[in-house]
Amino acid sequence: MTSRARLGVLRSVAPHGVALAILLWPLVGIVFVPMVDLPGHLAITRVLDDFLRGQYRDSLQWNLNPLHKPAYALLYAVFTLLPKSTVGPVAVGLIVAMFYAAICHGVASLGRRSASSPLVVGLALLIAMFLYGSAFFWGLIPFLLSVPPALVAYVSYLRASGVVDAGPDPARRTSARAARFVAAALLAHLVHPIASLFLAIMLAGAAGAAVVLELGSGRAAGAAARLRSIAWPLAGWASAVGALHVLTAPAGHELDLARSAPAFAAPFHGVAAARAFLAQIPIELGILPIRGPAPAVVSYPAAVGIFLAASCAAALAAAMMPRSADRRASGGRPPATLGLPPIARLVVVLVLSALLFLFLRHDIVGLGRRLLWFPVRGPCFLVFFFGVLAAALVLRSLESSRASRLVSSVLAACALALAAERSAVLRVQFAAFDGKVRAFFHGDVPDRWFRSQPFSYADHIRAYSCYFDDACPDHRALFFSIYPDDATIYPVSKAPTGILRSPGDFR
Image (cartoon, helix red, strand yellow):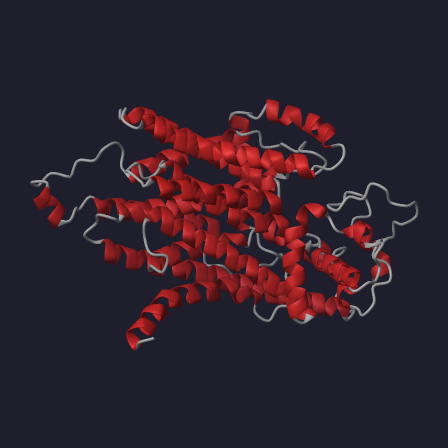
């Protein structure tokens, strides 16, 4: 490889290295990540390891939920390669890297920019930092793992349907994007089925926008083919998910579907639902892992909202100054376009999807035996999808701008600064929490410190005793000790009488 080629590779990789360093800085040197369910997930990994080594073969069924096998496969892969004290932060770091990669791909693809562009990297970093929200601190690892493939699927559908770029596209490229959409969406469903519900909401907004824009374009030639490109990927995905559900559904799922029918039959609550959902979003996106947060210069959700609004204004202002070559080619007039430009199309997609999310029934909880937690998981899901749309809108506004390079440099620098400030705050929080857990196991910190946090870790961190100790004598009681009220996220329907134990047994 020549020196010029090496320099090109370095220029492509270095921006992503900086972004990942900022994203992963809160996890460096941390053993106990502030995630409520992480001890339980790691303890399941320990149970799986014992099972594969021929021990406790009758106990795996008590603690391993088959719906989330991909999550535990990831944890076990890390478990077999690294010391136990690094498995938690490394696995979490892999999830962070997956989020960043999916977001960067979406921003670059919809924004028509190189993935190594400083502005693409800056905007992707800004959005990826929202991973450290309530879903993260609850430790909803299976759900978090489903978001990156769902985002890849969403972006692939936007490209395959032509909703953003209405220009001609080779049939083979459209078919490849549609196939990629179906594969990624199916993977997201396999990791966590609830992701399919949120993805369906986003796809409904995108498909509706595509149909509206197609019907309003006035182009009769090829309309049938374009409408097929909108519909057939969705039909293929729905058929695949339906077939997978039939093949893997547990016994009694018909009763679960019947109980869930009212939630689907009355999905809208109007303005009240919109107000409740809007009130929940800043809580879920801006929460810190422990009380007494380190000094923060800005509230991150508010700062990012202001930044994106200012970025869009600056980009649109810059876009109003067309290049001189465009003026000469059009005789001093703006060049004519067929239909709405990509900027307007992105706005239509964003608005229609936002209306669906806002007015959707916000208290859907009857989805089978498991709670949907729509107010918690909804903001976690939509912030990345709407963030990618907003970032693509900024990039598209700068496409024809004479001052795009200057504006892009300023915006990239501001995005890096905001994300770095948030990372520094989280670093202080994570280090403080890690120190408290270490002190707890040494007997220097009482339970009440953990119970005073926004999320109570006191009953969960005892599961680390089954993860770190050389022997775990009773796997069956592990999660019943964490969830003594039987409100367990790993339900066991045939538990023998007397198996429940109090959390104090794991001191």
